[in-house]
Length: 65
Image (cartoon, rainbow, N blue to C red):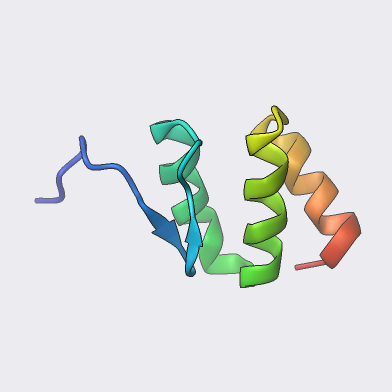
């Protein structure tokens, strides 16, 4: 049974420090479909205050999948 209260520290080698637990866990699930470059762009945007959806759209335009 997986622990639900554990925070995700990295996703594909990208640190999630500065993100909420919900953002980090959602990003972990999301990362299966995307590259490290895409994840890095999303993390950078979320750290600047963008929502998950907004950062995903920005990452799609900037670096693709």
